[in-house]
Image (cartoon, rainbow, N blue to C red; front, top):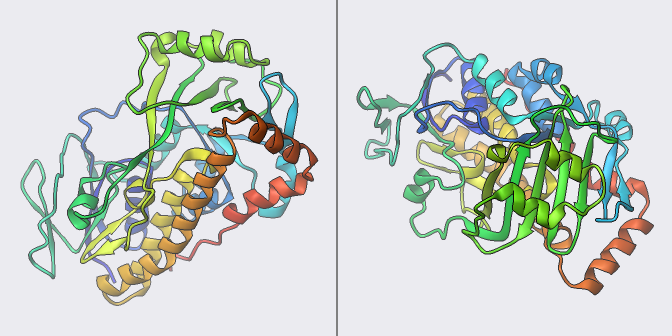
Length: 385
């Protein structure tokens, strides 16, 4: 089956879905609300499931070429003692690929490069879709309405198309945490590829990049809307006395580079990932906390699964039913696991609970940490034909 599709949203999930649909012969237009492609963002870790999805989409090798494998690292306490170490080589043996770290902007750039010029229209706001004709969907655009056989809602955690489809759903909620993050202005000598450090209600982590720079993030329990006049100074006050290389990462950061976002999630799962001729992907479908590093990977899984269903089924309706059946249980299970990981990790505040968790992590065999990663990363993508 082939047809025409409009993808609303030019983020990772939207671009990946557009690539997948074009690979199976569909005509695709991507509508992005932002008027300028600023490529802002920090870093991202991609697990084996995300890399496998990118391979199916034909961009896996390009991403590997700009990414840095994560072989060393783990979880520490603020004084630098280890709670758990990561054996990236063992994960690579088990999964065929290591976890990799890459600047989010590079991933966006490579996904866009896989689409033809003119496929992506920026500065195009899509507040709703006309679904009055059961055989077609009509999407407003800058040059007039677009008729399509399929609309893909990839418009993020605050998806307005999700609200249109499920007006009674409570939508995204604040997780209780806020994150400040940045990419260093220059290379920083780092002893590991990836680290997390857990305090009481706080987390600091880094992802090392291939060019020697690094992304760092600082997560704190805080009410929604909490902001600082000088975000970098606020991070220094909270984390500047923690173990090396945290002070060096902050010293290598320009104040204007720090991004600050509250963390929201769909705590109430959606009853469906497709309604009529509209499918939801990525954060629009299953926005989750970042505690497992699976948000983007799940969006990439969505893209490949949706394209495979459309390539195989005879009608859009049957394809979307299959997509929903395959993606909703898995992605919502990952979202629940991410929420639980946050509760036992960064969000934990009671001193006794923190001490018990730390003791349990130190006593746990290294294969226990690997099993947690394998549980979510060991996914086999479908073929696109």
